[in-house]
Image 1 (cartoon, rainbow, N blue to C red):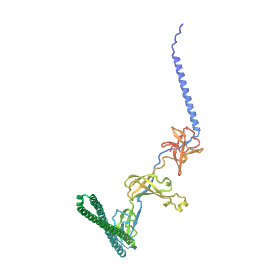
Image 2: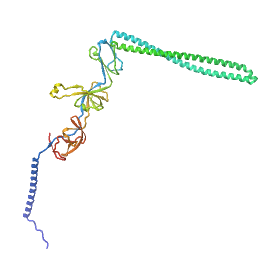
Image 3: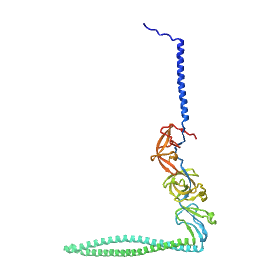
Amino acid sequence: MEEKEQPVTGQKKSARKKGWLWLLIGIVGVALLGFLIRNAWLSARPVHKYQTATLRVQDPLVLRGSATPKEMVSFMVDRTKGELAEIKIKDRETVKKGDLLFTYRSRMASDALDDAKRQQKRAQEAVASAKKDLEKAKSDLQSLQKDLKEAEATQIRRQKELDAAKEEVREAQESGDPAKLQALAALNQAVSEKAQAYSEAGAEVAKLSGKTEGLEAQMSGMERAVTQAESAKSDADVLVSRAQRNDGSAEVAPFDGVALVHESNQSTPGKPVVEVMTPEVQVVGTVTEFDYRRLSLQQEVDLLIVPTREPVKGKVIQIDQTPKSETISAGALNAGAAGGVSYGFIVAAEKFVHPGYSVEIRVALPALLLPPQAVVKEDGQHFVWRVADGKVKKTAVDIVKDGLALTVKAGVKVGDVIIANPDGNLTEDAIIEVEKP
C-alpha cells in the first residue's frame, strides 16, 4: 500500500529554523575564537621590522672646470731691453712661429739691425741676380744644344752626299764609258762642292761644340755663384735674427697660434702686452680625493658649456698624480676635522670651446650601488634579501668594492627593492613588516 507524505506542521518548521541558526552561531563563534587566539599568538611573538632600499641609477658625478688654451705664453715689456717701440700684430691675429710680436726702442740694437737688414737685402739681390744669370745660361745652353744637334745632323748628311759623289767618280773612271768619262769633270766639281759643304758643316759643329763646352764651364761657375750668394744670404738672415734678439730688440711668437694684444698694459709693469695661445683648447678641472678614483684616462665624459648651455662630448686625457692644492691644515688634523686634497685633470673636447668659458664635467658612475650593510656574505658568496610581493628572496650578487660602497655587477637590477638592514631572522619567502620612515 502506497504511503502518503505527511504535511509539515508549523512547529516542525520553527524547530528546523532554530537548528540552522544555532549552527551558524557556532561557526561564527569558532571563527572569532580562532581569530582572537591568532592575534594573541601574534602579539606574543617578537616582531622584526626592516628598512628597504630601492636600487636606482646613480646621478652622474658633476665636476667644475674651465676652457683654457693648450698652451699660452705671456709677453711683458722688459725694461732692461728698452722701451716698447711698436706692436707688430693685431688683436686675435693668427701668427706663425718666429713672427715679430713687438719691438723695443734701443739705439744700439736698431743700428745693428739696420746694418744687418741692408746686408740681408744685398745678399737677396745677389742671389736673385746669380739665379737670373744661371737661368739665362741654361736657356742659352738648351738653344746651343739644339743648334749643335742640327749641325751634327747636317754634317752627317753632307758626309753621305760627299761619299755618294766620290762613288760616282769612281764608277765613271772604272766603267771606261766615253760618256761617263766626259762627265768626270762635272763629277769632280760636285765632289769638290760636297767636300766644301762637309767642311763647313764640320766647322759649324766644332764652333757650336766649343760654345756649348764654354757655356757649360760658365754655368759651373754660375752655380757656384748661386751657392755662395745663398750662403751669404743665410749669414745675413742669421745676423738679422741675432740683431732682433740682441738687447731685447724684439719679441717673437714661440709657436703657431693666436695673439691677444693688450695695448692698455704697455705702461703697466707685470701685465702682459701680448699673449700667444695655441688654437687647441682643453678643459681643465679639479676633482677631490674622494672622487679621484672615479676618473680614468681615455674615459668619456659629458661636458656642458655653462654660458651657452651647449652639450659637448669629451675624453679625459690627463690626470695629475700629485695633489693640486691641500685643504687639510695641521690644526684640522689635530682636531680630527674633515678635509681633503684636490687633483687636476684635463679633458679634450670634441668641439671648440671658447677660452675662459666655465664648463660642467659630468662623469657617469656605475649603474647600481649597494649599501654595504645590505650585503650578507656566506661561504665566500655575497647575497642580498630582495623583496617581492611582500616576501623576501635570498639573491646572490656579484659585487665590486668602490671605495666605501659596493657596485653591483650582476644579480639585481634597477628598481629592485632590497632589505637595507638584514639580520639572522630572515628566511626564504618570509613575510616581513617594512619599517615606515
